[in-house]
Length: 159
Image (cartoon, rainbow, N blue to C red; front, side):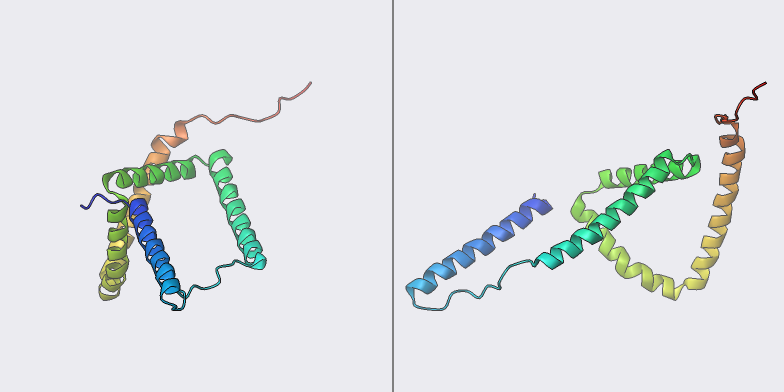
């Protein structure tokens, strides 16, 4: 409601922090007081190398999964990922970022408590829903996906 997004809010908070530290340092030199306590802000080379190695493994794993989905000839998995991404895009277009974060925090605090309280009922409902979805997917698979012709890579007999 204030017209702020996350980026402008973070920039304003950092601007305020820098202004306070600047004024503190200038007034400390004038009044013979100690400077504001700031930690030694350095990143060691070892930690950078460790982070880079972890990020490289994660990126390579993600790219291999993306390659399997796009090129891997698994139409069902491709359609599931496409539907999931479209659903995330649609939900994201309905809310702004702060609202999504707020909803995520509220859900992460309430859902585990509700599941602990009503675990048997929820498990029963999930089982029924899973069976119904499996039946629906089998119907779709038999009626639509089986009719799509796949390219045949059989070698022609040479005579």
